[in-house]
Image (tube, rainbow, N blue to C red; front, side, top):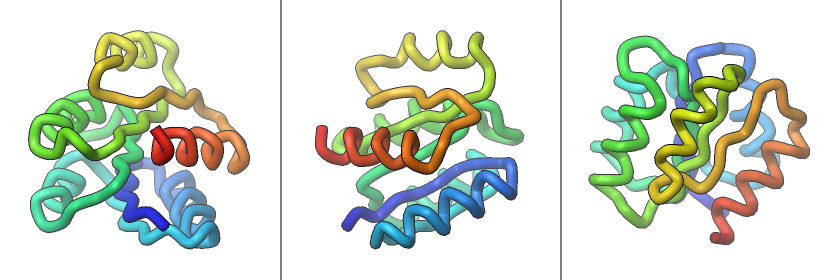
Length: 119
């Protein structure tokens, strides 16, 4: 399966994603903000970056721009609970696969991840 980096500042969402993705057989590292994600990206290669847009320290937009620059082959999937942030992310259509709106079901995020990895 895939090696996935999850960057999500809400602990409950981060833990839920980690459990669900590991049950599907993925190798998952979950971090609490974009700064931690940048450190993880510099230490290892990932097939997919699943990132929240609104996070402290380094937000998901800045994280995605840097990740796409450093590893153009990595898929990027973003999550947000804010409509305005979704529009900001869609301005990055060439770099990211999709934006998933919160709240989402495990089935919805699972399908989005599968689609991103298959693209």
